[in-house]
Image (cartoon, rainbow, N blue to C red; front, side, top):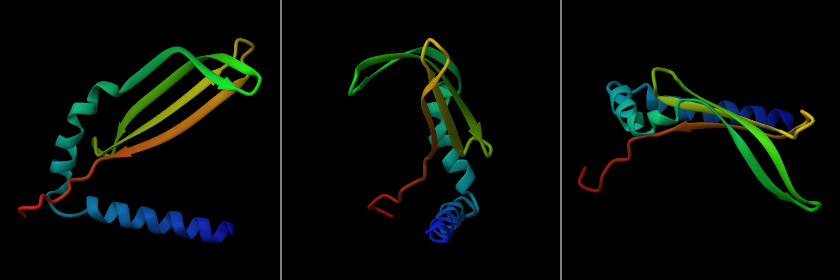
Length: 104
C-alpha cells in the first residue's frame, strides 16, 4: 500500500510539473497568481470548531509563502488550545494553471 501511494504521488508530481516546464508557461502562471498575492504572510487569530463534545476555541497561526518564483503557494495553519496542545494542523498547496479557452 505504501509503495502504491509513493508511486502515485511521484506520478502526480511528474504530471503537474510537466505543465510548468513548457516554454512561456511561467509567465502565464505567475500573472495568474498576482490576485492572490495578498495572502502571502503570517496570520494570527482565533478559530472555532465544533466537535462531539461541543465547541472548541483555538489560537491559530497561519503562514502562506510563495514558492518556485511565485508559481505555487504553500499554506500551513496550526491551531492550539489555551494549554498549548495542537488541535488543528493543516497544510495546503495552491497552483493555478492556464486553461485553454474554447476558441483556441
